[in-house]
Length: 600
Image 1: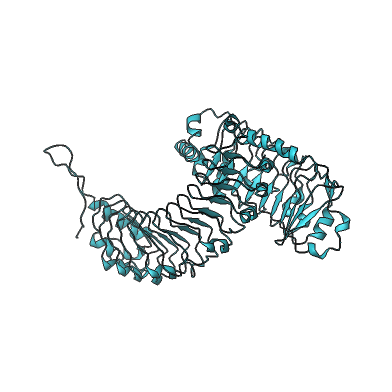
Image 2: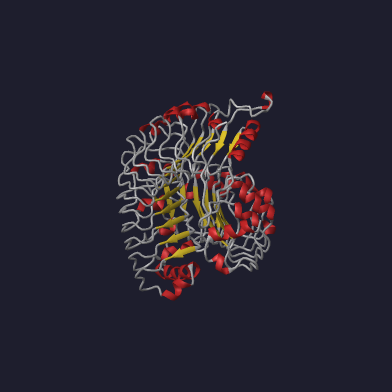
């Protein structure tokens, strides 16, 4: 049996010492694979594949034929493979092929025979091109090509209809094929970062796209098609030469555009009401929008190293929501460095006092509404009850999808009238009022976003569980305690973002079985939570929680299982964590997660 070539090494001077021949290991892996269907030959020092690997579906290796199965997965990463032969066409049942971190200079055209291939991983090789046959892989969903030397992509890649995730980062791409994206009806994740792209105008809208990374390229502008990607929630475009932010989809939750040439933020960005993370550091921004508080979901704002002379006072309205604010490296003459050093709470407090002074003008005794063309109704201060019965019969209210009544001095909401007047309401903002009871939100089936921060709420009603479309709920800066939160009220809600910071919680607002199945962001900072159960951590891992803020509580431990959670932001400062050192905490999320994994 031809056992193929393997790499060897020499240690010392004058004496040749070779690593043990791994051929037996590869043959043993092949025998096991005929029973499991999975061939794992990573880290075997292979320079090429032995013939019996290509013929693995025909070889019996002395086993009983009726016990053998076809090979569906081959993992041969972290070897020294330079090339593959056309004999890969024999792997007819293969669904996963992982050849990452080898030395492949080319890839055989015979891959077109692998009609069952769903995942192809070729990252970390030396590929300069690919065979133009990728469209003959009808079920290919995952393709990773990062860390190669590709100067262009084959046109066939634009016709991979099943593609869900494509990573071509860290290559030498200067352009993409014409029409890219037009047929990608299933693509969710796209990574084009660390290339030499200067123009993406050839790309078409991708309705299914959720995340895109364009960082470290040569782009002068973001492609306009992004605004038509209705499911797009994460855009990364740092380290380019972009001067303007085009219209973004309403689903946007994270925008990272540090190190560009922005001079300001467009008004259209304020329509992204779910935006949670905004990073525009190291640009040339001279001012922020006066009504930046319309970004009511904002938890992180990074504007350091710009040309700002002041921060808008209405930014102070985000107190209780905005937990990370970085504004160093600007020319903020009216904001002392000492205040900036104290963090977001101190800055927002100061800004809020300035806003109170500016708004200290007598208000009329009636509500005034401004109805925008986009169906957004903005309410100004007036009577303590909203809405008013005088609003009945107004045909122009039927199409209202957002009611903004922040800081109106409201003491109560007429639930029935609200549902009657605004049957299509999706966004309801009642922040900074004097409400003592939560409105009967279940009366409006279309509600997706509700903001009730900074009121006088003490309880969460059981009827909240009937809000079947509610995705974003802000209950921060109230007086809600665990005793007034029904045990499974959040369990069946499609919540993606829940903020209950600055309340009177002594435990998390739900137990393990009560975690919303789609939860992405949970903010419970500045409470009195003492215990973080392992079972709850396991539930967070299961749902794929991305942002967790437990800062300024009374926790002494964090369950190690959280190290497996795909968190992009993990705020833990201000607790009494005995084993997790401050030096690790200051290094950020990745360092904390790594430390937790080491404790498992």
